Image 1 (cartoon, rainbow, N blue to C red):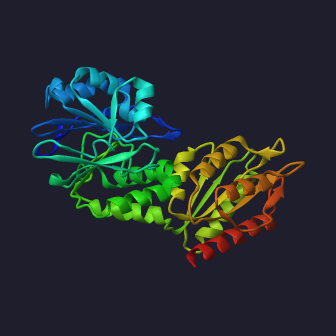
Image 2 (cartoon, one colour):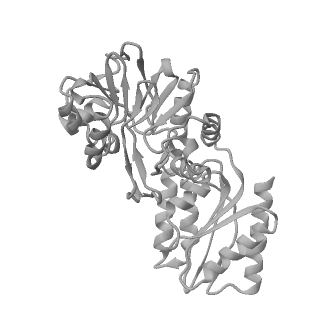
Amino acid sequence: MIQLKDGVYWVGAVDWDVRNFHGYITHRGTTYNAYVVKADRVALVDTVKAPFHETMLRHVEEVVDPKDIDYIVSNHAEPDHSGSLARMAAEAPQAKIIASERGTPVLKKYYGLDVSTIKETPQLDLGGKTLSFTPVPMAHWPDSMVSYIPEDRLLLSNDAFGQHLASVGRFDDEVDQSVLWHEATAYYANILMPLNRSVGRAMKALGGLPIDMIAPSHGVIWRRDLKGVLGHYTGWVEGRTVPRVVIAYDTMWKSTQEMAYAIAEGAASRGVETRVFNLTENHRSDVITDILEAKAVLVGSPTLNNHVYPTVADFLAYMRGLKPQNKVGAAFGSYGWAGGAKRIVEEEMRQAGIELIENDLEFSYRPTEDERRRCYEFGASIAERVRA
């Protein structure tokens, strides 16, 4: 149990071991955040993933007898938020369960619970504290909503402003800042990026609220650098980019690798930040994290069985679903007796919404010195474009 404000407590759980979340690698684990709001009446906002119910219950009992909980609020029906909702409802038999209109049927179907909607109860008067609810559909599920305590200027923000970050510190000023910002960026890139418009609408809807603290459903609670996280989210929603070139590739016999390295040298020669990822050695979600703010994305593949290399196909499918904004890009590759991968990569990149730059960088067998030079020059031209 950790106190956020007078009468408001974190009662969640830390998951040090999880390493995969929707196909996104979570190098540093995560947390499942739940909050007790205690005044004349008591509300529990969200629960935790099912295996962590006992941990949450222990934390709740440090604050209040579960039988004295009057309300359980479900900001989001996904199982990492609501997985222990039914067990918690059994511990708090008098509690009224409240969810968004679109969350109610999901919770009823999964858990067979009697759930009221925020249309019926748009806010709760707890006697000294108020909980008000705002639906934020598709940030990041149709049922998503946030809860706000005006007396404390505290936003319980659901999946917005989160990070997959397990730590002993519960607040943003208690953890390594470089780690925090990397994980906040990775979280947005891999979960919220395709939902930019919905996140933007949610931020606009909440824009008039005075906020001193943001308590998300995953990661640490923002109490010091609210301006920083709100500024980053504004930039990500708007698709702002920096002069950065990201090159993602895989290779069979080092030919495509030689091309990737030559392109990278050319881009770097113009003073542009350049990052290169071999897709066998790097997880797709780490690459996407660097792509979020990058202006240019280049993807290279050898041709295998008249198609792209499997790791490249995996990455392209992932990127296509996330739809990065405001990117230019290109494909390149090598082949033996027959090509074709470059064309397939280009089509997938178009479907991802990337503006393609035409080129003829598809070479047979190992690139010659002249072909390496062409790769270098192409990288330099990409760098000039992203600097413009």
